[in-house]
Image 1: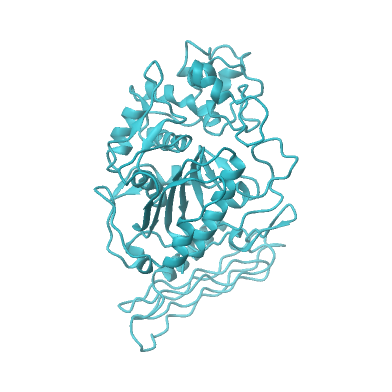
Image 2 (image 1 turned 60 degrees about the horizontal axis):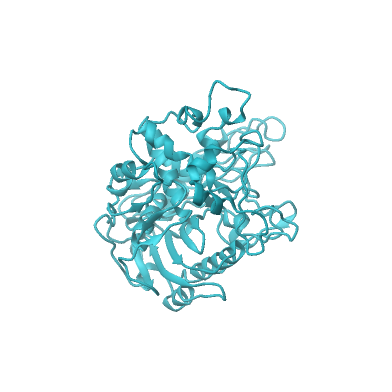
Length: 487
């Protein structure tokens, strides 16, 4: 019941996001009054009733407020629906009752006793996405991006320039591209030009994730629960249940939790073996297929470039072609970037963990696709359900990486304690960044940031010095400066 009520409340809130004035100076006629609150639930809101739906707006009028909830935590009704010609929208949802009647979960203001900074507190306000929603001519950059002045896109040009030119002792920026409401607000090249292709490094993992989602949408892959041994029968025996590798699924590979023996640490003071360098000699996929499972699959996340290399065989078997060939058909072609380059191993298998090369403009297209919930110029390239599944985790205090996308910057880019032995531990302090933001990241400072709450995609390509802590430090301050530019 709570979800159904929340959906009603969001209807009113969405309407309010798109129109806030009647379009003239005359006061708009009021809408009808909201309905009465629902009947009281049993005890502390155990069976919360629903408040009445607000009245519809008059011609150009404001819709009535939703009804108040009942005594023991009843949820109020949705606000009035959109009015007539004047375009005024209905009110927000009704009042909330007592302890049991929260409309959705309350905003999280702290995690394990650590207070969250202002931007890190999630808001339930629906986001305004796309050119049309911002009152701009609608288009998709399939055949090329269109630009508009920062001021027209609601960005302070001086602050935006400060963000683009931000640097640190270890940074070496090559390109920055800022897109808001679908238009390019800024595009700067410090090395090369708009046609220069840049190595993705691990940003390729997010492309692979997208292609897996499309393959599931098309029915080529049943689900992320399919066992990887079925795609590598000459390496792993699905019938040998004593071998933990027979339990590894696509989901495990995409959430770096296969349990395969692996060591990978990109911090500047790391002293252990980095298996990425060893595997680059023997071959990444062959190395991973030869590793033993040291943990039950799905029990622990450990950062591994080896895990997503296993996705290559999924495309070879399920689609009958390499990930690159499949990507050209279902992703790169439709988005207008058929020139994407993607490396392969000695057997012609696409390196689904890295090796993709693209321009800043092409990287931004992937970000825009996900900002638009998988829609592109009237077509659903990848399902909205997949976009949500892969970029927004259910645990705001702890989630930081999901289905080959980095997510939840307050936690992901939060301060790590000095005793943290892994690449990521529970933060000792949370970053002051919007929790709805997610991003693709590659070593040496490659980023595709998607910020739904500000309708922005930001690409940054670089050749920074070593040290994942340096890349994170740069990303945190860079994002903060970008957000400061929003007027």
